[in-house]
Image (cartoon, rainbow, N blue to C red; front, side):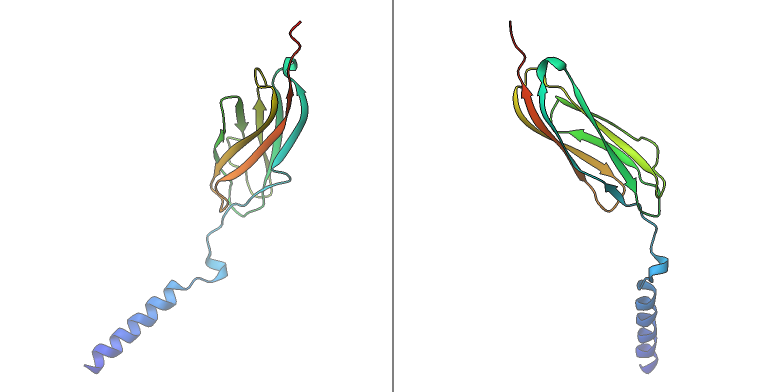
Length: 136
């Protein structure tokens, strides 16, 4: 019986020791960072057509950052992004485009960014005011 208790004690100590991870054995992870997550276009003229803005993304982590999808909150907003992995300490981009046609007045649009960092999802925003075109 003593041998059984001793064996269980040894096994539980071994399991506990292996379940602890030291800082050096943690997996390497990417870290996504933006200088800004919102852009204000201010007043834009409907007659001037689409407007775009590029958000710069930096990988401050220790593994490659992958952006898998950027989804706009409506059909009037489109996006393009760095499709190849962003290596540590390198930069990538997310370009968002808003079509103001038939959308006069204030707007606030959200882009949901899916990625492999610990910050998932990330939200990016654009806002502004569409000045209606003159119907002469």
